[in-house]
Image 1 (cartoon, rainbow, N blue to C red):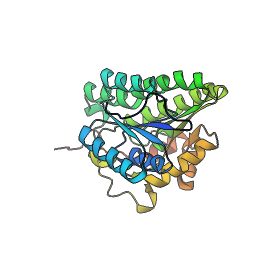
Image 2 (image 1 turned 45 degrees about the horizontal axis):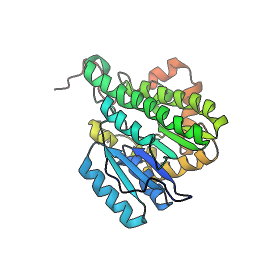
Image 3 (image 1 turned 90 degrees about the horizontal axis):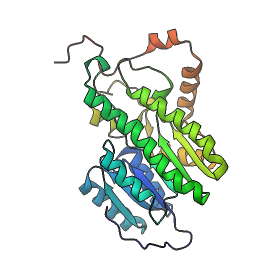
Length: 273
């Protein structure tokens, strides 16, 4: 971990820790929070990219930054971030943004790939949320934003386990948020729809046929998330169009949802040559 901070921060100093901080929604959170005066702990796998991002944010906004190069799909990676969450200066906002999807339907997948998805999308979120809440509830202040997805409200991508992992994140955050609220701590699931990031490209998922109107911008997602966090919401769904979509997913008959489900990864039996 690279850092240049004092052990006792000045009064009023605020620190946020963001996982998956170098791209997409994570980078948008970093930029927005830095502009608001938050000091940052940035977590991602690529140490060089982290260092560049930290220097840019410090230069532009005058905030302090730390970087932790860690693979959160591993026990060691999670442990490194857990240790920082227990240290001073205290982290008052945790954004669990790191996550992956697989460009392979389940029946063609491998145990190693599926376990990695679960360890990053579920296991790391559980561990880091728990580590953060231990100190936040003692201080009686703090917040956790767990980045989930609209995909978690329905099985609309046959063969994908991504939506199942995000269903867990949303349910987990909503439940834990209720138990943390009496301690003055907020936990919220952020459930965006399609957002312009590197996410789909990294997973090798072709999104070229997705209509333009369905896309959200990462900064707009972050703005609405922070507004909803201030309002005390347990679940944030940015944009009215995705609020309507979630209402439909929650109340539509399962048989209807199955008819409109679309597999962006290719159905079983299709030639993937």
